[in-house]
Length: 111
Image (cartoon, rainbow, N blue to C red; front, top):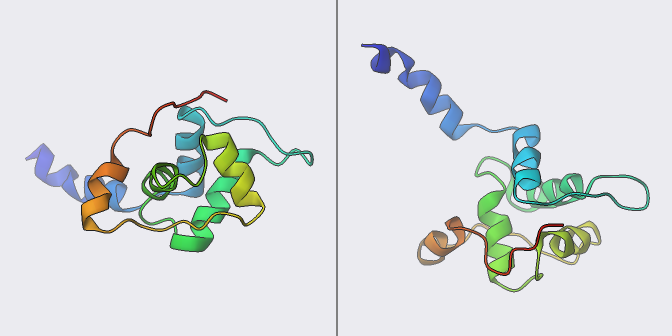
């Protein structure tokens, strides 16, 4: 009964996210630091992904997809390139989605 009563909350949590949650995910993945104006790199990356594909799917899928496609060699470089408008994010198609949803490609540098 408890599971049945709590299921609507679980469903909402799985289908909704916030910029704060997604930035935290990027920090947990190892992205840190800021640009010369002290704007955190996680902000730049989150805003670039949000502008290209929205936030409803989270950031991990389009970010890992971009890394797998060779847009950058690591998260910091990806954030720097995205802040300059040099990266286009996408939601991968069905066949590519499983690969992109996995762990980030190696080498996965802590920055």
